[in-house]
Image (cartoon, rainbow over the protein chains, first blue to last red):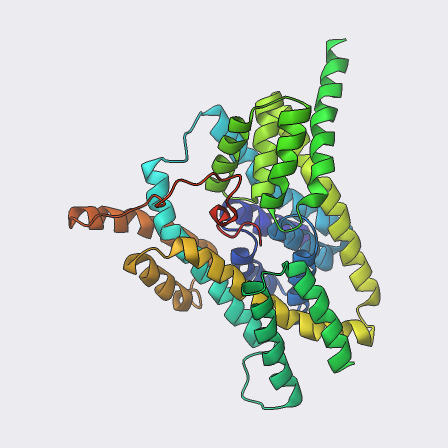
Length: 180
Length: 209
């Protein structure tokens, strides 16, 4: 049954997957909570590994969540579920000769869709910040250092324009130095 | 003879994308120069204009840009079978890499050093998500209406399913443009300058991250 849960979650996700992997986190998070596949902390770890790996973050997250929930079978089912919509849509669009770009209806849809995709990412950031004790009223070495890591990571990405993969690796080393 | 030839052709499509796939570090955008080199210059299956077309089209349908553009190119070259061959080709290497990383993680997850590393990494992931939001907001938030949709969208997501929210966002887009046009507002849906999707990373609505 868990394979079916994985399949329909990622199959639906494949049809609404706009704007890269991170806007899809709320969909994964909702399914993870509803079906009890894993804790929020482990889900964040999975998203981190997905972000560190080559390939699309959405597909990588599906593979890792699938593996984490149901082993290699789960990974295969989840990967197929998220890829199938792309195949269906590509064949459909190509077969029907649908001209999608510069199509006024598509442009109007994107006018509302893009801001909502932004909301989805902000929502994902809030959820993960709460789940990982980044937003907290406790003042301790850990909470202060986490806020500092957050600030420095954002600085490296926005101002220094570092590749996210390097930021994750460096952050991991900092974590080992500070918390082990 | 013909059947044999077709299998060989499909394998060529598969192999072309299989080789390109591991460079999709940092998203579909990183793949484009390699696609042009392999598909346009080496194999001569398509032209540079075809690729520009395909990348733009891949953006308007849901799914990862890397997967969509590979599948589109496969379809143009070899029909439905070509599409499947390209899709498997582009997905298989990253599937194996991601799965190996996942399996290794589960073997060493109780290691205190790894646990410590992930305390920090989880925080960095929040920063990466915020960074993704900022990048997408740059192309998504063009006026007061889009800002309003974004601002209302966040609290609403605490109450409704994200898939439902995505559909509501799409409908809001259609309705908002119609209302604004009736009220006589002029909305600039097109970018100020024309961009070539194969060279402008910001075109990719955050697809690279």
